Image (cartoon, rainbow, N blue to C red; front, side):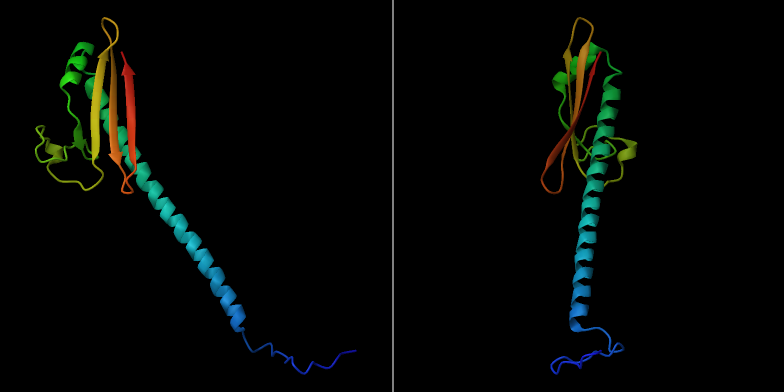
Length: 153
């Protein structure tokens, strides 16, 4: 037994389409999903930049450590006393135009993060040295980071 339709309620024709409320809900769901995707993308880009910087800094520290390990412990300690911080790019090339160590690989400028590379060596025992290489940099948001490598021999 079917009841007659209420006078204030109209029957909806199934072929009539969507209501404005249906459309607004669908648009809202799409906006929330899009904002979530954009947020994830921005986070991924920032993590990629941080990862690249950490990899470049570690590589720069390893290059300097390998160079220092060619010295005798006494030479490394002596060089540590006159060492000044180097400001280099990702290839290890000096960033400043006044650099005194020219390199054939450094004839072209590279845009990127400038890294400050320093080292110290202290005598440990009669024939040993503790060598530390530090590479520091700042990210675009102003945060400072560093990588330290230490080798005792």
